[in-house]
Amino acid sequence: MRTSLIILALSSLLWCQKKQKEANSPIPQAAMADSTAIKMYQQAVRYNDPLTKIYALHYRIATEGASFGLLDSLAQAYFEAGFYRQAIAVVDEILPQQPRNATLAEIKALSYYYIQDFKKAIEAYEKLYEITSEPLHLYQVVTLQFNLQRYGECQANIDRLLNLSESAQARVRITTPEGQAQEVSLRAAAYNVRGVIYRLQKDYPKAREAFEKALQVAPEFLLAKGNLEDMQKELSAQPPSKKN
Image 1 (cartoon, rainbow, N blue to C red):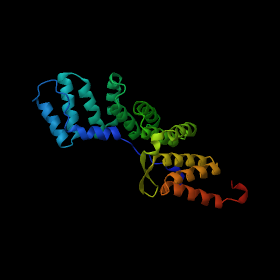
Image 2 (cartoon, rainbow, N blue to C red; image 1 turned 120 degrees about the vertical axis):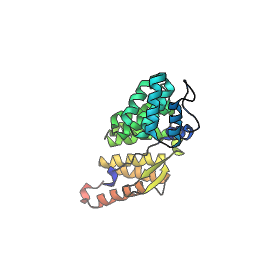
Image 3 (cartoon, rainbow, N blue to C red; image 1 turned 120 degrees about the horizontal axis):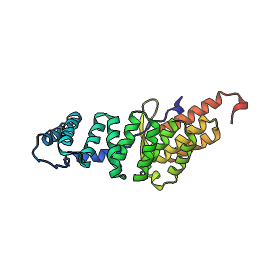
């Protein structure tokens, strides 16, 4: 069923910004500036080789000590290599030193999502949103709560999202079940999730209202159009006494 699919649009904004700066911002050099490990790390950055970066960082940590800068770079290297549990372990070790470090908090949230530990991903995204106040991070909470069928909490966060003035300008990438990708207003996406919840709860009038609000905001919103059309077909197929 189309309405059962809400595609989480990962908003790794801070991570992308960090990656763009990485090549021009080598890790702190507390020891010899011409050491083999430093050269190895810089070469791995140049060739986008996360495994060699991890090896070079471990060597430096073993010889120089576990500084925040080296561990921060190790967390990023683990994440880049897809070693998400290791990335989380390093972040948990150093995040207390900089509890409002948004990049580390985002690595943790994304890592929990990628290992499909959605309960912890929600907690991580909630903390990330406390740091950034970025509407897209709150939308991540909404979609994860929807996927875990925590509809009451999801509706409450949709209310929060819709009350943010920034949600009118923010945009999110949505993918339909047919594989069509589209960038739409975050406000429209939130209304669509609300409509899906009401449809699953068989509250068809409220579902229709939510889908129509999504389309008022974004008239070409394919997923909201499809959800509304599917619901209308479902209602048409029911005996008249069961229609709302």
